[in-house]
Length: 101
Image (cartoon, rainbow, N blue to C red; front, side, top):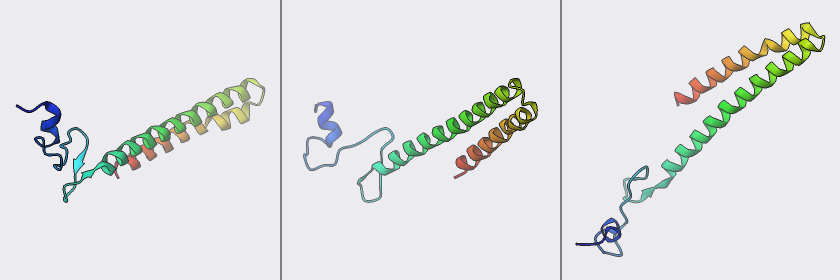
C-alpha cells in the first residue's frame, strides 16, 4: 500500500498532477484554479472591511453628536445625530448589493 503522500500525488507517478481537496478546484484543462479561492478570500476581506467602515462611521457620528449636544450646541448635535441611521441604512444597502453579485 502506498503512503498517504504518494497516493495524493497520483500513486507515486512524479509526473501526475497532485490531487487537491478542500476549497481548491480544477478548471477544464485539469490545472488547479487557485484564483477562485483567492478571489473568494479577497471578496470576504473587502466585505468585512466595508462593514467595519460603516460601523466606525456611525459610531463616530454618534460620539460627535453626543459631544456637540453636551458641549452646548444642541441643534448641531441633533443634526449630526441624524446621520447615524442614514449611515447604517447606507451600510445595509451596501451589504445587500454586495451579496447579490
